[in-house]
Length: 466
Image (cartoon, rainbow, N blue to C red):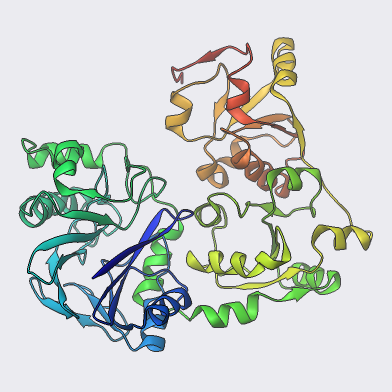
């Protein structure tokens, strides 16, 4: 028996490859099917099952395309009713894979169809659970993403409490927990950086698994402090319930080199936005006017989902290097952005060589901000999350988390000058690019972010004042 976790850091997502006696199962695959098929072919195995723990909200799964190409059967637990063909498993149903088997544990709460798959080895020993978003390492799935009709998040939290106590906490302590996500995912609040653990350790350390916790306490703790989910979550759920098109078609259309003339025509006549995926420093030094920066070498897909509000938006892009253009299109498609139309051949240098206009973002060091701060009358925008801001910020700074910039931009004045920072410089350049594209041109970025600011004598506080 072989169990392999295939972890994608950008989405903090774990897919799984399990193999026994030449038969393989894939659990919670990403949009691209080729890596899983290649893995099975390399191992001389045939994909028999594609297990889905639930309808994912934070990425578009490639299970339909994978099933068509591999012949594997898509398995969901109870209450799943997608538009495509599946085997809807019953609670307690078992599936044989070579000499091992999977037992279905219906664990509603995160969503109504949420299912945990229990792996039982050749000897009949319970080895591991693939818990999806029901149980994370250090946390549990948020119960506010699947509310229907009169059902509230408290109702779902109560269901989650019962699922954990009756289906998971009764399992042996030496079982390995393999969740669908780790730290950085918006599907939970307090996830660990670890991507697997023994169930016994989680019973001791996971706040949601305290043995003496009442259902009322559980509901309160699990729902306390939940921020609104990213806007693309509901749209990804919808795509996962329907048969989203395969990645091959998206790549055929989107991984296309465009000369400057064609690139500009798509922007002007197709209302395509320009997405610049280079480094923050490269973007600040020179970029196409009105382009949006979201660097590929960061939390790319989640920030695209948070900042580009229309999944059907036409996109053309600047790649960090042209040999990474396929990576850009693939990672966009993972969160449902399928209308990519191509990339600029030759990148920003080609744009410059045609004599086209270039814009910049002025970055200043923290020491220069200190000088301006001491002179008074400086507007500072901190685009970190609320919790980061509470942990320490410049006195007088305004907290405007990047996640909510689109909704709160009207609070800013286009005639004012703003100094923007985040923790290290990635998010502040995203914010600066969006503000400049919307007509806010008096923008300074603080290079090095709060890490650099913390080393100055600018007055700081860890108390949020209203």
